[in-house]
Image 1 (cartoon, one colour):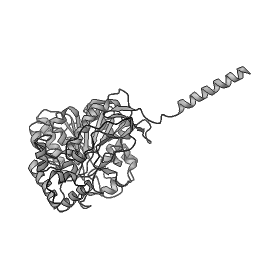
Image 2 (cartoon, rainbow, N blue to C red; image 1 turned 90 degrees about the vertical axis):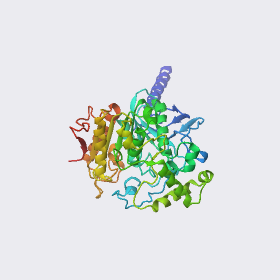
Image 3 (cartoon, one colour; image 1 turned 30 degrees about the vertical axis):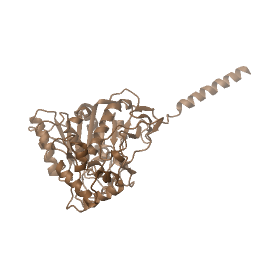
Image 4 (spheres, rainbow, N blue to C red; image 1 turned 30 degrees about the horizontal axis):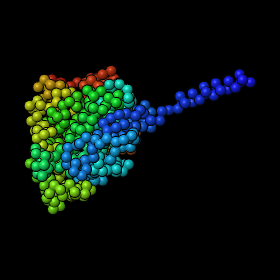
Length: 464
C-alpha cells in the first residue's frame, strides 16, 4: 500500500513538473531603463519577438515645456506596463491639404484603415521589438523615423509592424515625436527665450530618442555602438537633418534615406528668419502676441489654427519644417555636404518609380553619391523601387516600399502575389545586412554595388 502511495505521489509530481514546463512564458523579462522598470508582451504573431510598447523617452512636453527641448523622463514607481502603444503627436484626422495633393494615392485608405490613433500633446514614446530581451546579444539596432509631411503620422502605423525585422536579428525601435505647430514652430519670442534660436522641437525629440537608445538598448539585446537610423519622406528629411548635425554623431553609425534626401532634394530647411515670420503670422491670425498666451492656448485649438493657415497657402508646401536654428542645424544640407561635414558613415538612399518628383529624387541621390566618392568618404548605395502595387492604378507611389521594408504585406488590403512576399524578404535582407555591417551585401544578399562615377549602379526592386 505504501509503495502504491509513493508511486502515485511520484507520478503526480512528475506530471505536474511537465505541465508547468510546457506552459508558455506569458510575458518577456522585466527590464530596467531610464525612469524605472518596465514589462512588455510577446507578439501574438511571432512568439519569439518581445515588444515593449509606449516607453517614455522624455518628460511630457506640456505646460511650460511646450516649445522647449525635451527634458529627462520622469521616474515612476513599481513596474510600468508597456503593453500599449503611446499616444501619437496631436494632428488632424488627415492632412488639410486635401486628397488632390500630387501624391497619387489615398493615404487614409492605404495605411489608416484602422482609424485615427490616440493623439496627445504628451507623445514622447517609443517602442522596441526584440528577440533577445535581457540577453547580451549585441544585435544591430535600427531606429525608424516615420514620415507625414512633419504634421502627421506615428511610429506604430500598421505598415511599421516590427516583427519581421526583429526576426531577422535586429532590435527595432519606432518612435513618436512632436509634429506640426507643436514640433516645428519657430517664433521671435521663442528665439528670444532660448537666446540662440527656435524650432526643430521634433528633431530634438528624435535626438533624445537616439540618446535613450544609446543608453538603454543593451537591456533589449542591442548594440549601442551599432545604430542605424532610417526614415521615409519627412522621416527621410529628418534623417538627413540629423546626419548633418554634429550633435547626432555619437548616436548614428549608418543611415537609410527613403524618398527624401540628397543634394537639392525635395525637402529643404528654411532660415530662422523665414520660419519665425511664418510662426508670427500664424499667431497673429489668432490675436496672440505673448509667450504666456501661446503656451496657454489649448493644444487642439493650435492644430486648428495651423491647419487654417495651411489651407490659405497656394499649392502644396511643407509650411513648418526643419529650420536652420544655429544649434542643431547650422546650415542647409547642400552646404554642409559640399564641405564634407555630414556624418562620414555608410548610406543607403533611394526613391520609387512614381515618387514625388522622381526625376528630382534620382538626381539628388546620384549627385550626393558622386560627391561622397569625390571626397573619398563612405560610399552610398542607391535603390529604385519599381514594383507597381496591385489593386489600383497608384503604381510604385511615394511610400509604397514601406510594406516591403517592414515585411508587413499581410496587413495591407492589396492582393499581393507570392512574388511580392519574396521581394519583401529580399529588401529586408538588404536593409538588415546593411544595419549589421554597413554593406548591404552578405550571405543572403549580393551584387548591390555602391554608386560611383565609373559604375552608376542602382539596385532595382521589382517583380519580373
